[in-house]
Image 1 (cartoon, rainbow over the protein chains, first blue to last red):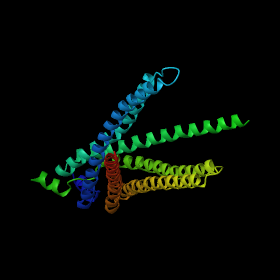
Image 2 (image 1 turned 90 degrees about the vertical axis):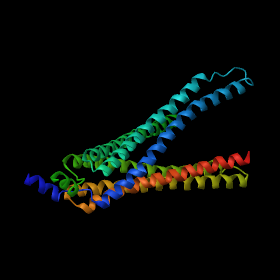
Image 3 (image 1 turned 180 degrees about the vertical axis):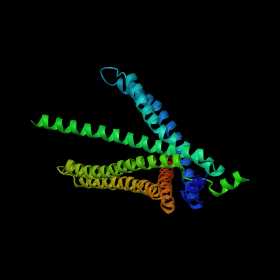
Image 4 (image 1 turned 120 degrees about the vertical axis):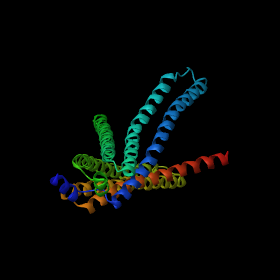
Length: 156
Length: 150
């Protein structure tokens, strides 16, 4: 018991300064996440309507050419790509939203479990965005290497 | 009463599990920041490549006005990419600040470092939120301008 009390006395704690910063961080995080959810929805809508728009263009300008251009496959592909982008963007927004919600609850009710859950979601958000960035950079690096290899092969 | 006194004295503390989660968050924060630095540097390199490509592609044209227009477009692209690179760089500095200071606070039990680390996290989130507000305002301005022109 004595040991526990000493640990609490000299351990780190969330003082008023830290609380104020965390409250502001949670507020900005909530705004970012809600805006992110709306952007996800807009991306999906763009995916649906961009496909329809391209199909419409294909039908209109297909008449001028020799053959009718079938754009239905292309339309589906665009919708899927946009949906995947929205899905990729949705998860960090979700983790950020959870971070903000748990943090606000923790600060309002001085609840340690909510504080832990909040930091856990922050960690997951950093991990997710970090891994996605590394994967995207790796894909770009591979494309770049293929381009160089293609250039060398064509040159030779 | 005893319970209340303890709660008010030590309201929210960095206990064993919080410390473990924060340590892990700061490690991933460092990786996140390094990725941000790389993306920022790549943006600047891409801007320089785009400007050079624009100039090289139009250097053979006789029309000097066309060449000048392409030059302006190339410089605009360079400035835009440098700006994006700077934003990524700044946001990564804030996350690195959070990661390093929190990690130091956990190692040395330094309360000031913990507060500074949390401030870094707040700055990172505030930067992106403010940029998002600016972007949304610019989009709104663009939509309104287009609507008025039509």
